[in-house]
Image 1 (cartoon, helix red, strand yellow):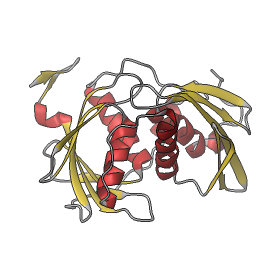
Image 2: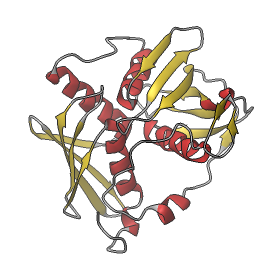
Image 3: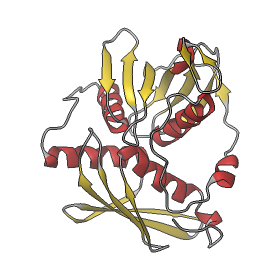
Length: 245
């Protein structure tokens, strides 16, 4: 049994079960269970799965993050409170069922292990590595767990970013610069992403939001998708009402 900052935290509460029901050509869908709870919460896509788990970490205060989150804007509390109520369900996971245990949250990412039912334990040192493992396992084509050269790291980041963000329009304007454009409600959101370093099995660089002419540095793949995800989800709420970092 571990001790959190506010109360006792049983070991089972630190383990999450992800039952995945769909993959192939659409974002993954499934149910997230915490500990031994009989019912879980439905999610769609890696981005929502990561956000839900981050919320659990904040409630449990374990594992503690050693870095504050970055974003285009400093005020996000009210926006996060407006999250829609998610559907609860009980499913076994037709495509695959995995247990995930995050033990640390260093380098603006996650470190822990994941195991498929009946499979071997895989240790990951970043959220990017976890996504890559799940994608390869779900597709039935396992590859190397770690990228070696810079070009291979870049290709892995680009592939996983397309999957996680599920963006319909992606352009590569320079060898080291990606452009993602999201359209909705008559508005477009354009992000220019430039990964510069590939340390700790993740990536570091800058992301520029064209419509608002704002740029922020990201320290991990997890932080990058969080920065972009918040901008896409709360775009209509950010018409000069919050202060820029």
